[in-house]
Image 1 (cartoon, rainbow, N blue to C red):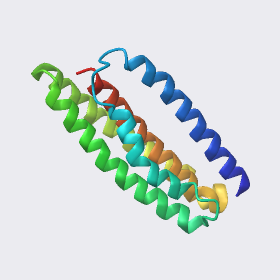
Image 2 (image 1 turned 90 degrees about the horizontal axis):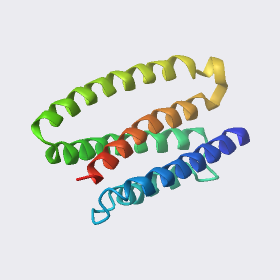
Image 3 (image 1 turned 180 degrees about the vertical axis):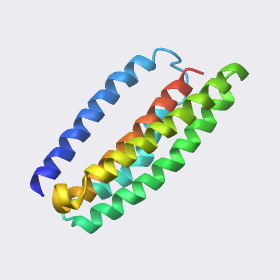
Amino acid sequence: MHNIKTYRRLLGLFLSFASLLTTSVFAIDNPGAADLIGEFKSRARVHQQAIDKPDNNTRAYLIAYDKYQTFLDRELNIAYKLLIIKLPKAQQTELKKAQRNWIKFRDAEFELIKNNWTRKNFGSSAGISRGTYRCSIIENRVLQLLHYAKNY
C-alpha cells in the first residue's frame, strides 16, 4: 500500500508540474481572460484531498475516486459547453467531432483499465489504480478544453 501512495504522490506532482508549464504558455494568449484552469483546480481540490487522506483504506479510496470521477464528468460537460459557444460554427462542428472521437478513446482506455488492473493481476490496489487512471484521463480532457476556451 505504501508503494501505491508514493506512486500516486509522484504522479500528482508530475501532473501538477506539467500543468504549470502549459498554464504559463497559454496565459500569453489572452491575459485578461478568467483563470479557468485555476478555478477548476480550486473546485477539484476537495476531491483530491479526500483521495490523499493518509488514513484511507481501500474502500475509502474507491469512494473518493468515484466521487472525483462524477465531479470530473460534470466539469467536462461544463468545459465543453463553455468552449463550444465561443467557437465559430465551423469549429463547433470540428469540436463535436473531436469530442465524439475522444469519448471513443476514453471508452477504449476504460476498457483496457478495467481488464488489466484486476484484483487477480494487482491485488487489492487494483481498484485504486483503476480510479487513478480513469480520473486522469477525464481530468486531462477537462484541462485541454479549458486551455482552448482560455484563448477566447
